[in-house]
Length: 334
Image (cartoon, rainbow, N blue to C red; front, top):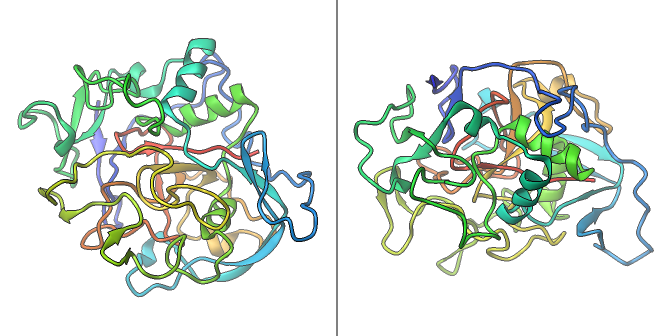
């Protein structure tokens, strides 16, 4: 298993594989078109006046609206194409309140007999601070020395052989590639949210804020999301261990959505381009031209202001669609 770190942008907190493949229809019903499932659901019924957020089959309903998408944050990453900010309009849509859990993904694997990319490759990336044993001799991705290539690491064994998910049914499933997420969507009748839908939902009805709850990262000394605590990457704060938390950790945003900042990276339907805001429509924008990478949003437990603050709502990231790591997951839309 070979790996690469950055691509001219400041390397983020998830490595990328160098392998390239197309989605396989034999892989538990994976979509045959990389863009399949990426269309916005404009048929969602509007809410009654004044009813606010509502749930439909477990998905939160997001009303049709215009919102300011993107960021010109001075602490942002211009090479990611975070801006320029612009007004975007979306039809109503639905999105899951949480990332897909280990329990939910287990149901899919059992029913579809699906094999994830990490399992197929025989290894995945695990953050060094999560290893069960000393990993000094394990391979490291170029430019990201705090990661290790761990044989046998997968969604069922997040930290590698000897670890398991038995006591983590409601934690987000990890070591998930974009292809894996698409296969789950095809099986479940859901889809991945577009970048625009994801950001609109993450903002929770707030306008121009840095985070799903406002502009303050910490409130009265208390964290509001699961990002790196301590000195990155070698000195975690006492009492905090790097790793995903329960999918309903912390307070939900204004739309009832959990962990839209930190915890695990979440795949989106779009292909990734740093020119996203210049190439897509202002109405139901989506970018599906093949770029070799797919969009990810939200950051993870490894993000820290000193290195990667891509847990901001307007921040963007992308990775190769077969990449998987101990901080990569997804949530579904409908």
